[in-house]
Image (cartoon, rainbow, N blue to C red; front, top):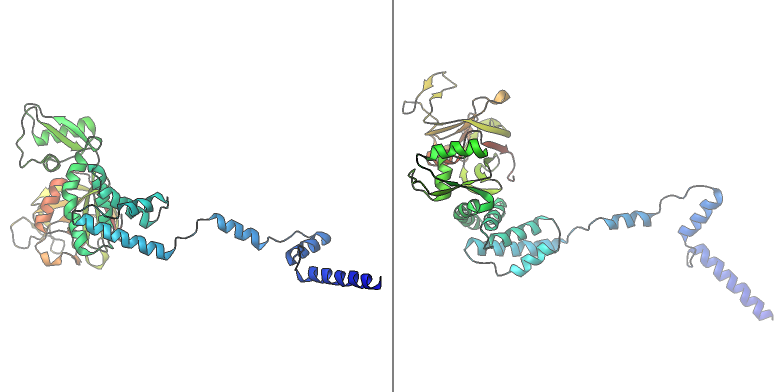
Length: 347
């Protein structure tokens, strides 16, 4: 009997000692809760509840997975730029299927689109890949070369273009006027020539032409010195540019008001009006003047008599292109085309 009593006492000591140390179900947290309840105080938020809330947020993707995905993207882009179908298409599809919205998944989706047989999807995919500046220079150059014909095909599909049948007495200029009046589309004869594969202005009654539904707009980066031509979301062309010294080319949105061939130029330093071909004429063969906006009157896009200034910040604020490039651009840009100038390298 004495031994039984001793065992009971020993068990009680172990049990209550364990409670005090948190070894049984009444942990230290439970003990604090009991104490708070007894004193009438409100229990403080528990760390476990905070952790549960954090678990509801999406966990960041592992760096190793991103690096592996980027390697797959680079390989796919190299194959696409070389005119081949990516060999790792299943892995690209797997990246897209996981449902994340990060850079890797977006690039994987773009690579799949760029490999598509669908003309519009291919054009948009190539455009998105080219906008990612992290690929090797040679691959990006090949992507840009592929974008030209892809843009022409993509912009001419039924959902991206309207159909116009030429009637007697029509000219490309008249057709542009009709499209503006009847369908509120702003196009140029140059766009019609480009999209329909015309080598000149000759058209015939009954001929069917297509015109893009989406507007042309320009994107200029102050940090990488490029001008890109877009129709909707699809890239059409890119040109290197020269910009204003001392940040005189402002970031912001502008509109082209005055497109002119061999425009007279008012020299801001001398106040003298200089005509094309005269000594001191500095704005090349084309002028795409911006609508006056606050302190930024007199800005525009033009050619240059200083080709070495392209890629540099040496102008008085205007955007300079090589004359051959500004002549191409002039053909594609209707009046009131929007121009977006940014500091970074992304749209």
